[in-house]
Length: 110
Length: 403
Image 1 (cartoon, rainbow over the protein chains, first blue to last red):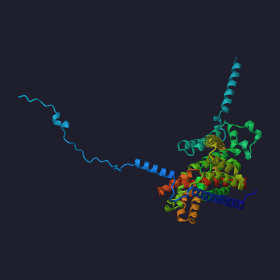
Image 2: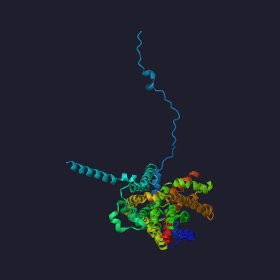
Image 3: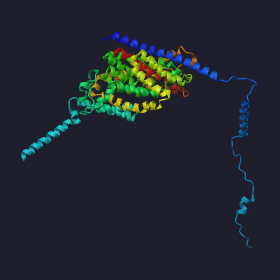
Image 4: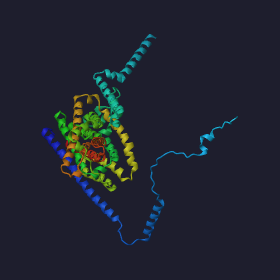
């Protein structure tokens, strides 16, 4: 084939268009996929939620709630301040740590 | 006795002369021997870039060493005449072929790029692309550089086949560039592979100025909506659907896309972990060694040291630049048609030029400079992997027109 400028320009133009068409087609396909799958997931999530029946509690449910409450209460502590600050250092007088009785008493020889 | 001595000295002299003539050193002093010296220096420079500066070392290192081996006079590891005219000359192959000629058959037959694509597929996470399919468009826009460079190369006097091979450098995808060039213009394989891998290593240098030039501060700081989670079933169906659709539309792109998606399915299905690990590591590494060595071997002095190589290097960087700019500009255009909370950060458009994951990292880095709390990496991975698909599609189209 004899390639001139017109052929080259056409090839370039058609190629760019083809790249866009192919990838645009993939965009639509993947969008469709996304739509189907997100709806499927939403439907599955809705199906797994158990129906709420008011005013009726089974024995197992009551037992589970009571166990949870018991565990919660036994694990509970008084809330304490976590800030520990040394306010002052004061040592009360005691003969045991007094300096004076600790010193060797020199006998007074008169 | 004296005649015996004279005969012996003649024999020794001839033997030494024969030995000296058989050494490669003499080759440097023959006509055009200086070209081999220049090519060996180029190989040393590429080795320096790969080892010292870690420029795409896995491939640049092996390419540089292949270039060194092929340009050593007398080594006879690679013979261009065995592949002259784009065909393998089997009649003289067995008698003349050197080690690299045998290994080069993998390139010539299009095996190595496809095997590398199996590994690339197994290492690629298509999740961001599945979550945001619009990224495909950014991947398509970044391929515009290929076709503009295709015209530019033709204007510089290259044949249409050579122009197509040079243009594909803009796809920033090494295996695709090598695959297409080995089919269309095998005589340019060396310069094109060196240009493609050098520019891929230089993505952090080439892209940021273009990205900053085409975007405002406000645009660069755009925070994108978090991507939706992608289910396992979607991840499994994606490679199957893409392989079937693209292969049906563009059979010439089937080897590349088919291998890419095969590797990805191995990873996502979760039942062939051994195969997935093998293609990601052992197979990939072995093929990289063979591919790099043989592609480097095609960079002989006759093929490399001419004005065409300079033209290829200039056109290659042009292709990269136009691809980057097209991606950014399309993202800006797309922003005109979307709601405020669905705005796209135009920086991720630049990641459409494949070069996985370097281009996505560049988008993240440039974006974080404007807004440190902005994490664009996952958003940029969408156009980035779309660019791999886009460049394979572009290669398939060029092959169907020019092949």
